[in-house]
Length: 148
Image 1: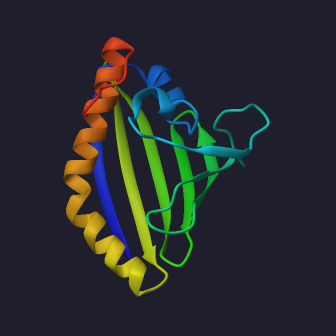
Image 2: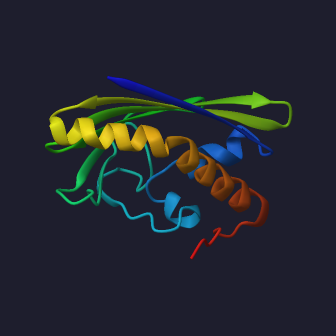
């Protein structure tokens, strides 16, 4: 098991940040994001929402929104033959902005998963820093940050 953490400090209130943490809305601010919603009564993130994202050199990853509250979202992710993840997003008001804490609890399911997790842990600081830049840019401008 590997636990990775990153905290973002955003100059927007939780009410502006929370809706963007959704498989549909992430298309607005994460370049290259692709998700297929399989189950959602509202069409957005909600408890029990199920969606897939393209796997890395393998089958699609299956995501389930296990918890969806105003201050906390938990995704469970299954990457077949590789790993499972509990992804917790905790939002708290911080002055007029938001403290957004990301916690990835990664569990390997195979040697492939162990290798993936080691590589992801090495890339994690840079990956979350880029994700933060993307989110800050979107919250500031309403447009996607393009890195191509």
